[in-house]
Amino acid sequence: MTTQTAEGLSKPLFVAAALFLILTWGSAFTLNSVGVRYMTPIWLVAMRLLIGATFLIGYVQFTGGKFPKLSDKRWLWYFTLGMTGMTLPFFFISTGQVDVDSGLAAIIVGAMPIMTIILAHFFTDERLTLMKSIGFFIGFIGIVILFLPENFSLELISDWQSQLLIVLGAFCYAVTTVAAKRAPKTPSSVGAAMMLICAAIVGLIWALFTGIPETVPAMPGLLSAMGLGIGSTALATILYLYVIDQTGPSVLAKINYFVPVASVVLGIWLLREPFSWRMVISFFVILCGILIARIGQPKTVSP
Image 1 (cartoon, rainbow, N blue to C red):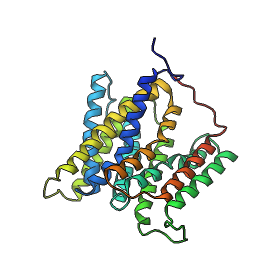
Image 2 (image 1 turned 180 degrees about the vertical axis):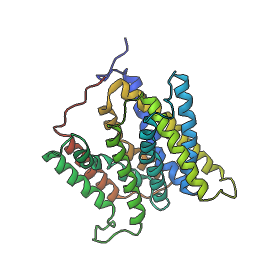
Image 3 (image 1 turned 60 degrees about the vertical axis):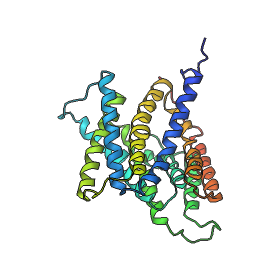
Image 4 (image 1 turned 45 degrees about the horizontal axis):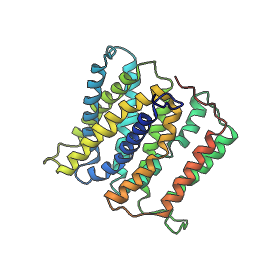
């Protein structure tokens, strides 16, 4: 008899799913770093979204899902979520990664739960508590550390503007997390596909307004876009929805802790990015803030 986890998945299947999500989400930053070397960030985003949307539409059709009519108000909701959860953050992060290493970008985005805490206080019934406030303050210090030089002098690093763009991308993810709680009920796979469709349309129009590239990007750039679209966007979203359905969202939060670690390792191994103790310190400070903020929160009941 196959051993089951407390969440409902067999242990081998859960481990495989967790490893896949950690690697695909972690490698997204690595692929971004490669892709922006061969094409503009907005074209990388547009290609990623178009590929991802195509795969997810196919998945919805294969599983018997149905999209609502275009007159349905849910399209407006998921259009907005597609902007804040995909098109804008993908663009901000990709643009920032023109100058910022992949591992560092992943650590910055990993601070998203800290931002969600504040937004949730004002726009949901999840109020700030003492532990949440302490966690936010500690997490904020972790972000600030990334903007200081290696010697921690009170000067801004040279690429602080690029890092700020990535912070803005993380903020967009936080906004989406809060806004999604108010969205009309829709099957998760259909909602994700609707987000991708809307995000892809806007991404393509945005890219076309910047001009059509005169040449086809080199193969590494095309492979990066395909990897982002198929793996980090489409397949990861499908598996993400499956794990949520089987285990509940609390397990995904634990998996997310390992994404920056995977990104740092992949960046050092594949892209020869430099190792920095500042990144390590910042990661653990942010993680500490997130864990403290979660103390006392009611546990999510798995479906």
